[in-house]
Figure 1 (cartoon, helix red, strand yellow):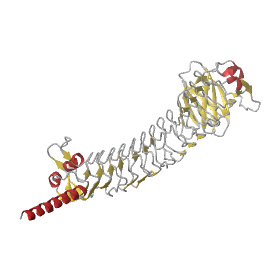
Figure 2 (cartoon, rainbow, N blue to C red; figure 1 turned 180 degrees about the vertical axis):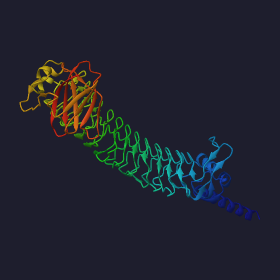
Figure 3 (cartoon, helix red, strand yellow; figure 1 turned 180 degrees about the horizontal axis):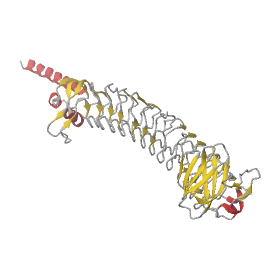
Figure 4 (tube, rainbow, N blue to C red; figure 1 turned 120 degrees about the horizontal axis):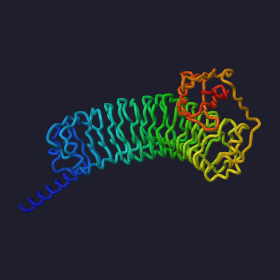
Length: 505
């Protein structure tokens, strides 16, 4: 009898041990919303769990807070119902149906996850920090919340369904092994920080619905060598592509893009060529800062200034400003160029700010023959350059002024006999009509006006407000800021012709 009892006890012990092991490795159960804690009971050490039935906010908080060993979770047989009741552990009293709650599975060591059936949104931070390599997002999902997948260090591939209309800020931030992303929906923007820190991201195709790329959206994506820029793009935020692996930035098809944010393409060491859209009016501070491979950039005629640090540290392009309407070059905007020997200044240039062309290591010639007046200089424009070895080519009319102006006079100044300048002409015989209405000067030309430069008789240049008509042939200038009744106006047309007018108010 005693022997039989011992045998029975051993069998029970073995069966109990087997049950505990089986529970620790895998568990399948069915539950109702709000009852998951009770259903699981003392089996919270389970590593593999499949759930069927309904879940709500309270159930997800239980999973995140108490199921710390979960590495496999199958919720494909569940639906998410609404929650309204006493405050949960995190203090929430409501949860919406059909939405994976905010921070639902945050911090769990999950390596495999199947999401609930029919959800329409993935909440903020819902899956942040998981160890999943790949996940199937239900076709019903229309919105990805802020930081929804942030810091999923093992995530390698993501495909967003056709229903996706919104991708929240930082949704995939810090997913260091994420290699490819498919956006099959039609969101109108890539929010700030969406893919920031995704060092392995090499493949992504932006849908044509994208109009805005937010700040730091692709910051640090060093493996991203190319990207398409949708034609309807209107905004690129600051640092949007900072530190990426882009080799080219062709924005020529983005006709509605007026500006880029500050430092938008800074630190892209492989970026060698840039094309900006024809109607673009400007770029932000430091847009192409420290892009050591950059040798070419097509600037539109509509741009009149290069902001501070815009092209600092580039390899350089001696014809960057040739035939442009650039009037001002900002602080250190072209500093630390390493390859340019000959640089051409545009006829429209009126001012170079502090250090604008400092630390040029290869420069031996500046062509300034198109200038009709000496541009104003900031301090130390050509810092660390031995100007006595650099030839500055000017036209005969401006040579004396260049030779008497600080910084300019330190160059080896020469005149170029091949430089052709239209002589100053009277307004009543010029192909350009000019007349005043009070302080407003109106210019009318036979072709579109691409550049206007205004000086007084002492050589001072003025940057005055200018408005143009639709075809660019008429310009109206507010001259009220000038303290002289006599002015020299240089007008350059798109057909290559130019004229200088001496006008009296």
